[in-house]
Length: 85
Image (cartoon, rainbow, N blue to C red):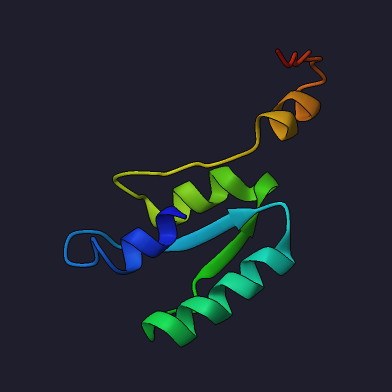
């Protein structure tokens, strides 16, 4: 997960400022983990629908977005076919 690298490996030159996801529970669990493991946070959380608000509030230089391709396809009402060989 990128957040672990930001909070550990690259902590001298990067900063995690917020979390954004459609699952509040996931963000809560990660905030607890970050507080315990890295002694930082909790970070402000935003629902996925508030992505633009998060960007406007925090004005980050860089944004890392990770997501599932299936989630995006469903969200955009698109179909996808996967094959196995």
